[in-house]
Length: 268
Image 1 (tube, helix red, strand yellow):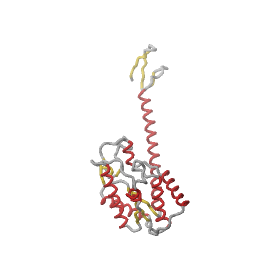
Image 2 (cartoon, one colour; image 1 turned 90 degrees about the horizontal axis):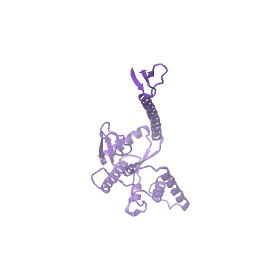
Image 3 (cartoon, one colour; image 1 turned 30 degrees about the horizontal axis):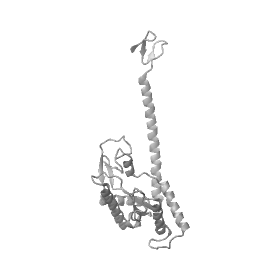
Image 4 (cartoon, helix red, strand yellow; image 1 turned 30 degrees about the vertical axis):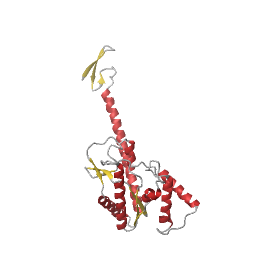
C-alpha cells in the first residue's frame, strides 16, 4: 500500500494494488502502460519471427525442389573474401554490421578463401546435389563484376586480381574433374582485352546491356541451339534482337545488389 497527495483536490488517496479506495478515480500508472507497450512489442516481434520462419521454410522447400528437379544448374562464382562465424563456422559474404547494425562485435573472423578451400567446398556441394539429383548437369561461370572494396590491407585492384584468378582456377579444376560439368567463359567475354571495355559501364565495373546480350547470344549458340564448337552461321537480325530482348528482361528481373555495393553504400 502507498499514499499519495492529490494537491489539486485537497484529498488524500490511499491506493492498494493500483486501485483507489472508495469512488476516488485511479491515478495513471506509467509502469502498467509501459508493461502493456512492452507486451505488445513482444507480441509483434514473436509474430514477425514466426512469419520469417514460415517464409524461410517456404524458400528452402522451393530451393530443394529446384535442386531435385533441375536438368541444368548454372553456378556463378563471385567472391573469395568472407566472414566466418567462430561459433558454428557459418560463412557470410559481407562483414557483420553492413546489412544490419544489431550485430555483436565479436564472434566473426575475416577469411580470404584459397583455391583449395573453394574447390573442396564446390566438390562437396556437387556431391550433395547429385545425391538427390543424379542426372543434373552443371555449368560454372565466374562473375565479371569487379570488387569495389576489400578487407585486405592492400589496394582493391590487387584483391580483385587474386579473387578472379582464384575463382577461375577453381572453376577450371572442378569442370575438368567432374563429369557433365562445363565452364562457360562469360568472365573472359566481358573483361578480355579484345572487348576493350566496350561491354562495361562508365564505372568499368557493371556490365552494359550490350554485354549481357552478347554473352547470352554466345550461350544460346553453344548450350541451347547446338553442341559447343559447332560454330553455326550468324543468326538473323530478328533472332539477334530476340536474344538482346531476352538479356534485357533477365537484367531487369535480376537487379540484385552485389555484396560489395552494400559496402560502398555504407561508406565502408
